[in-house]
Amino acid sequence: LINFAQTANENKFCDSSDEYGENNNKCNVQSRYSRNRYILYDVNPVEGFNLRRDVYIRTAVFMKNLIEEEKEFKWQLVLPPWDNLYHWQSKHIGSQAQLPWGLFFDVKSLLRYIPVIEMYQFLQEYPSEDEQTNLDIVYILQNDEEMFKTGIFKDKNEIVKCNDKSLQFHKVESKKFIGYFWGYHNITSKAIKCVKYHGTVSYLKQNLKPNVYRSVMFDHMEIALHDFYGTREYWRVRRSMRYNSELYDIANEFRKKFLNSTNERDNTNRPEDWTKEENKRNATGGPYLSVHLRRRDFLIGRSATVPTIKSVASQLKKKLKELQLNLLFVATDSVEEFNELKGHLSGYIVLRFVPSDYVLNKFKDGGVAIIDQIICSHARYFMGTHESTFTFRIQEDREILGFSTTTTFNYLCKDTKKCDSNGQWEIVW
Ligand code: GFB
Image (cartoon, rainbow, N blue to C red; front, side, top):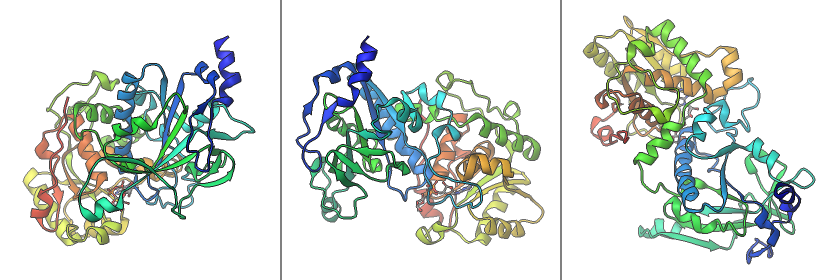
């Protein structure tokens, strides 16, 4: 009966009043029938895949604490679909829009940390009207430019007037705003509020008002910082982010076929369930050196630390000799420079992963990038690109697999002094 009442009354949940939905405190009493509360978020469109994975970690820790503190409600995090990321430029492989998390990650593993649902599931279970899903509120987080000018940073969570004409949300009628919403035309919001925000993610709790709102979206979630970076909770979420098992299968087949590398031989076996993993540092890795060679926009944006291909070749040669290896695996975003590098490394076997049409069509650029990361993470020794979040995620995977840190936190560099300052983010169990 309660379930029935819940469905019948859900659409009447909350009322928002003025232009941006402020003074939004009038709630229908019948809302108490439903305990379901949904948190949604999106990230600045220009941000890449691997920073977005970090934003998920912040949000997941936030959710975990919320679930423990606010037991009255049933909280769920709606996984923001991966939508046409700037770096995903492969053509002729169909759409790279609105991709579900399950394509890249093992959602069962995510669920062992917090309750998550894919967007398509949310759209099915959240009450809609005329096939339109109207969220209760969107908070658009914005940096406080004044703090960046003065250099004085203080926690801030302040509702401000949305007077930025470039905002992608527009009112179409009372209690209905349209916006990009991950490319879904059937999602709107009853209210939009702009928030000048500076602080860690837990500070967002005060915006949730679960007695008022049932679905709350945060736009520009990357603005909210980690409560604590690199803690045990950080690593628990990170460990829950296992990849889609087919991506491991593809990477493992490549390792076995071309790199003489298997989990049994390399001491990189893991339990099926990440919560059963234990602290270890005995992984040896396959008999190859792996490198993440980040080029393209890094050649401009990070020119102070990105070396020439000739210098990369000489750094790698030196390391291969030292490790007495003749196999090199290269993950890179530049096929041209891979070929150039190969030209400098005669006498060595230099490989990269080239996806089949099936793999590229099914898993897209994001899946191919993960396969590259898996292969890099299983090497005897890894060298990354300074300040690339793509490299950071490989280093984390190696920490989880149990490699010694000396084989992981190494960088290609133009000027070694600058690259040494990157730090070692060791796993915490
Ligand atoms: O992941 P990401 O944010 O790392 O962006 P950075 C790089 C993207 O380029 C990846 C592709 O998500 C991939 O799509 N890519 C890079 C690669 N390296 C490889 C590789 O080795 N193999 C494959 N298959 N794909 C940030 C950017 O990049 O750097 C920001 O996200 C900005 O937009 C900043 O440009 C400077 O942290 O390396």
